[in-house]
Image (cartoon, rainbow, N blue to C red):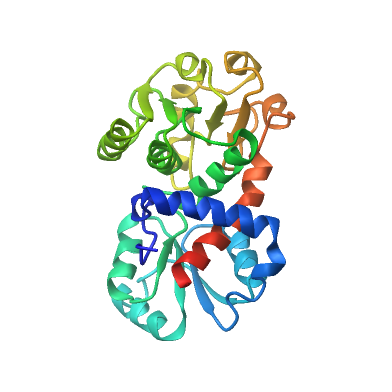
Length: 302
């Protein structure tokens, strides 16, 4: 593997993404073959933000591979300089998994640590989520090249990682967000260049119906993420026409699937009828976090 860290999605090359997804499928199919792969390895989990899926799936992935973990909560670098935190961890553990408010925190940890650092969510990226999502779609749709994936909602960290990963897998990615909530323009430009260089497509609009039309999968996320609570009412008003409901889903391709990174606010970004339907893959995505993260750990730690 070329990458030393996974700080953002593009740290993995296109072949590495494909290889990681193949390895994740193999690990999922034959878990006992890999049960001792991380024996004697210790991984630090640093979480500035609350977590259910990310925390527990990393803990389970590490344990099921035969390794162990130590965990810390709270603001990184608040009690002592961040570079000192990194240099301590560098001497104690084999890798560092970080869920931070700011992308800069994760990058600074990697700068001061020789051990692999994994971005478990920042304000800009959520690469582990995107890898699990692609594993999930691949299980249902096979080859993802040419698959139309619509993201309806906030142009946030999840949308950024999906854009960058979908572009490299040759997918046709469509994102619809209200005015003022489009994804980061630099990341959008990166994804556009990747899509143009391959067989993928990328379109950003303010029209959820256009994005959903003919899609094989429709993805959404909460309208108000952690740390944005003061904006909740303004966001509800801005996103009121961006709910993934039965009417919107009728525009998708027959047999289309629904995806959500969870937690979901039912009745806001998605209706109960959609997220609890047989077409919803939300909980398969959550399960596949374990397998995708196992593959990532195996690749980074050899």
